[in-house]
Length: 560
Image (cartoon, rainbow, N blue to C red):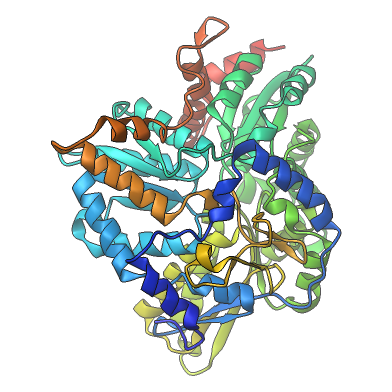
């Protein structure tokens, strides 16, 4: 149970759960796809220069499943962490009846994630039918759900469009191309970062930058299949994640010493990787990286000379960013430095340089982490486990503070992990405080009719999901997925499997399928889907064998 800070709004949520559809994100569904992207990009310029932050909201996770929110934004998040049991039962029964699986990204809203976590625990039949993960792992989980005699016969994918597209592609490459993947809404669910790689300027950058070089395009997985296909037709391309991008670059330069790496489309991530290499090369004293330390801790085939050469070979696309991570501005950074020096600082590789540098500096002595959503989750879990298992902490109250330098939707998985650790260790004196680097009032008022009794939900006026007074709260594109729409899809799938299935349901479900822009297309006499899958398969082989495939190396060396 949550702490006594719950309000009447919680009762309202329960009251309407079984009586009416949830429409908490109505404003997000009214504005979709590229139109929303344009609004977000226009809004970031104002937000970046209008930030004033005195303190950050937070959630304190304690023993006995206690959660204490501090600040209005945290209170709004906490309202959703204790899922409505009627919603859990309805979703669980529907999944079993429809024989479906659900894969969802970490950035789903807290209400939806809370319900999904409870559904996963509600029945042995559903223990492997619900997965919350990063974009790459979502595809792997979908494959696992479809395996076996009683495997899922369809998958609901909760994310942005390139994620559902990727899940469908991975299923097809693993022999499950007949399994339909359904999005929660028929509307386009865009992504500002992915769309930045679909502009003509991105192709022009590739064509210009690859000249007179053994070039390799390292493209972030958070892009469309079309981007991967078009890129692979222009320059040898391998996909990367925020977890493996560093090792991809290190291994590529080890195998092709004169390589030129073109990284895109995430400008912040690319610049942060260059900053990381600079920090390694410039560190002094006890923190210095000599050849032996580089070979031991970074990559066995590298030394200071090769790291400098790699750093100088990286060409970063200059015009791509995620509207979420773009919002960690100067005042947010100043508040972290001034008031949270005692906290662990986490930062996704996509966040702007200053926020990244704080986390990177702290990571050198174990007080921070930079990396993917999974890296952040694992770091927080590890630190809490170490504290909870330390016998010296059994008699002294200890609160570990973590600044969450990524999208706030991650808090659901963090809360679950911390609670499991505290329950298993039985240590009553350890707490974890998850600090959101946003303004404490990063919420928006909504109409009573739309909110079903709740006057505040996470976000800001206008539905952008980012606070102009102190950073980013949530991803507006992810929030186009909601519980009500998901339930609608499940019910339609269930009806189509029975004798009363209607043509209308089947037609509607077709509109929920992932984008299919590449089917039947050829790019340079090559099937576009195969070409778009190629960079993903190269990455898979690299992850399995810890070396870039020979086929890719040959293409790199022949590209000049």
